[in-house]
Picture 1 (cartoon, helix red, strand yellow):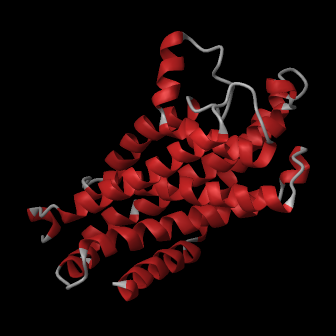
Picture 2 (tube, rainbow, N blue to C red; picture 1 turned 90 degrees about the vertical axis):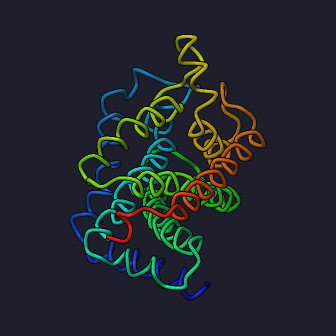
Length: 253
């Protein structure tokens, strides 16, 4: 099982690194978002007393893991069309190993790109200590597994890459926008405030804020955020394993 997980993980990493447009887009798109929003709102909007560039820095890290999950899990649909997935499914490899290898591959990519952006923290006015970096990386790893697992589960049941992108934008972008990544949510409409508390991304972004910026007003405690993120990761991995275990005629086609 471990060899199968490692092989699938390695394939995702190599495949991503060889696709330079995908690599560039995954990293530069969130950076462009950060530059545009930070420049537009600099000095005019200070959530929690912070400069907006500093506040949105954590949101951009979450965005990188989210976008990387979208780009990495789309390979599930491509693998089915190319016949690779059918070859894996007829092998004696446990279905859970297939889910774990693909999810860990995408999560590793998201974490790696987030680390690259994390190095730009001084430019955003974010002061980092060794302890904060280690804690932040742990939270990022959990969040990367969670969103990649969700993307994997959705990709597994989709046949069209265009349809997959549409579904991912429909679900994941609102999850990001309502998580407090872009703006504080404590003064939002009551309906949106309720959605915020049932949104699993809220806890991932909140845990990142606690890890990298300390206590932030309007964010649940670090323990609650960390528990919510861990539960999100476990739930999406379980969902990914479940959908892989379901036998479908089109998986063998």
